[in-house]
Each structure stands twice: as C-alpha cells, then as structure tokens.
Image 1 (cartoon, rainbow, N blue to C red):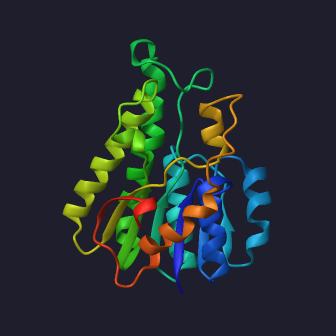
Image 2: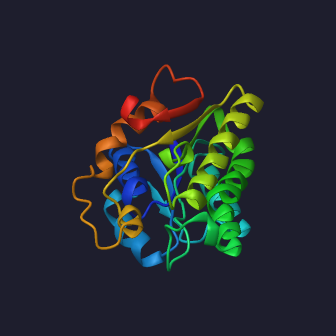
Length: 229
C-alpha cells in the first residue's frame, strides 16, 4: 500500500499530481483551505482518497493530516508533498520590498516555511523506510525578480530547510522542486488581467515530479528544476 499526503491539492499542481497518483492506485490524504473546492476536485479520484479541508498554518490541522495519512497507510506512509503556498498580500501580492508590509511577510513565512516544516516534523516518525519529502519551491528563490522579494525570500528559506533536512536525515529522500511557470490560478493572481495561456498546464510537469516521488532507484536529495528531470 503506497500512501502520500499532499497539501494544496484542490487545484493546480497539487491536484494534477493527486490525479496522477490516484490513477496508479495510490492511497492519498489531500488538503486545501476551501472545503467545497477540495470536495469538487477530489470527487473523481475514487475511494482511496481522504480529503480534509483546513489551513496548514493550523497546528491541529497538521496533526489531523499526519494522523490520517498514518491510518490510511496502515501505520506509516511514504510521501509528503508540501505544495500549499501563499503568494503575498491579497491587494498587491507582487510589490517592492521597500513598502512590503512586515505583518504580511510574517504571515507568508508562516504559510510557506513554518507550516511545511511543522508537517515535516510530525511526518518524520510516520514516514515508511526511505520515505520521500517533496517541497515545491520556485525560481523566485534564486533569481532577483522585481516585486517578488517577499515570496522569493520564503522559497529561498524553504530551499535551505530542504538542504539541511537532507543532511540531518540521510536515509530519507528530501527534495525541493521548482516546477517552473505554470498556467495556474496562483500564477494568474500574480499577473491580474494578463494572458498567461502560453504557460504549460500543471499536468505537463507531473511526470517529472513522479520521477522524484516513485523513481527507482531514487534520485539523491537536493534541489531540482522539473524541466531538467
């Protein structure tokens, strides 16, 4: 029985990955903030899917997710995918650092860094054997894009968290994966009113993610661009 816990799974890359894994018979625990969207998205995925709506910044919700993954997996599970992510303040997610509200930056770090680490801390004792952790990052973590300083700083922190976790847990496979620009609602929110139809759909990079998740032999821990997998 192969089991994965995926956050941010009601749309975009998280849902595309969930659909791929479900199609191959994986057992899944999926979460997203909005219950209606999560239920609508996961209805087609079959009986092997447990959908639990909630906010990953909530410690009780994180515990509920890991408990569910352990139960579904028969006492342990195989893969944690930290895909849930915030972009920034709702009014202006892309903005210069000179006027970035610090309270909003703190909130973004809670979503993009502290919440994934919180899930990892709970998941470590529950991951089966040489389990895999996949943290979804961004090229904004390593490139100096104007207006992307807040979001990029959180993803840079997630990259380094991934590096250190891999060093501290050498029997696990701990990955940071940059999926590239995709045609998602989150990307559209970053460019309101612009045509982003030239970006590939999330489904295009799912086979690349699968090479990290269930490749045999597994790739070494580290940071990967999906386009290079």
